[in-house]
Length: 292
Image (cartoon, rainbow, N blue to C red):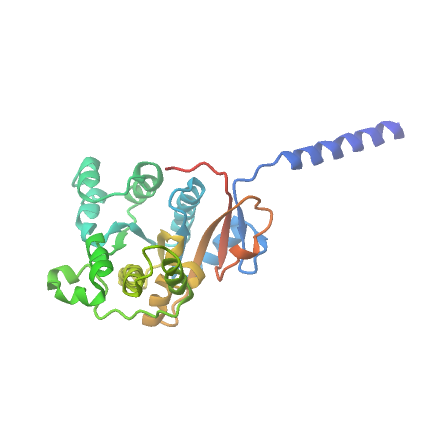
């Protein structure tokens, strides 16, 4: 009898060990200290924020799936949640609103709102959820033609725009702190490329990035005091710079929390190079299937 019990214990132990060895987690959440944590703990913490910046990898399906889960859960936490998206440009707000209200069909949204190529797989689920639940959506990004104008001619080129055009941009003049680590990294990258030896061109690239950050922050601020979930590329909120920096300049006491997304070969622990000043980091296997 004792031998049988010992055999059963050994068998159960082997089953557990084999089961753990075969686990293939699709992601791992890490807290601000780089320690593994759970989605439930992350949700409880994010629910205390005024603004949540979800920094995604644009072609990563895990990011998009988690965004939808977080949107659903924060909607349960708040009575007046607002969703804001880098993926829609500010001058497309009317078209977006008309679709959410049911005034126009989806084909008109797709034809007229400059939706991204991965809209159907990655952002349509978010839009359909907010449409079904009457959640406001903010098209927060600067029209790309104006960001391109800054890249080609510098920030001062925005002064020549009409008042009508300026309503889709953060108020001018836009301050750019070139000492921010993320902007310094861009300068370094440009300086190391064959086309980046031109200092003016490199600075214009940073300014084009900054005017996007400033504009997204501007349209987020307009939604306060309602809690806001903003979806953006990870670079726009990395180390709580970019959008977060502009939010703090306007309202220093604002509770801003950010999620940063990274890819690693192994996700049991956060690699040293991926440890940033993020409230939460989503570690995703580097061989995860991409949406494009």
